[in-house]
Image (cartoon, rainbow, N blue to C red; front, side, top):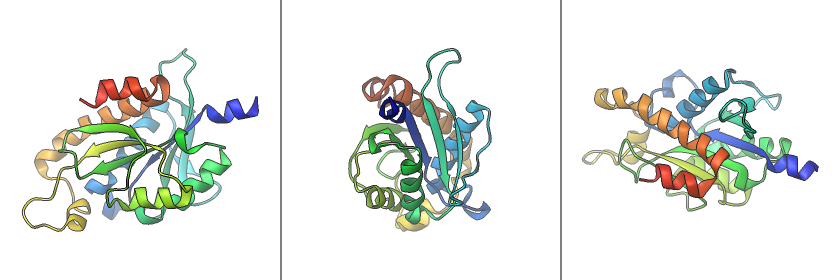
Length: 200
């Protein structure tokens, strides 16, 4: 019975960097999605007793349904160190890798698009690399939020650690809302149905 319970918990990790100076960066869109999901749960994120992450536990899905238990996570360390806190929380809540969802920015998708998948490479993303290294596998779900490629000769690192353009900022709330919908669909309806709906 205990293992069945454990399998029904999902860990949804918004990747980003802590602190106000990073808040508006493209690299922090995963944080924004977790904030939106916390709002839907009606509970704020609070410091976990491990001290290395903010979390909130609740259920995602239509009220009155048998919605799955979800732990939303925002690590309190930099993106490239986020694997440690996530591994600790996965152990604490007994969540297997295939019930972990990493929500992150994706250079190889145009701004305004998103894709949901299970497993895959890191594609140079330090947050994904840290998760894979700490978990010992890349077989977790990803909700990939398109930010597009840097214009001209701008370095990738400068681009992801810069604020959205004024035009993009108007669209970001819609993108965040759609990505939160994709997470909700993934944990309630499964991967195949979610990909059909969101990988268009």
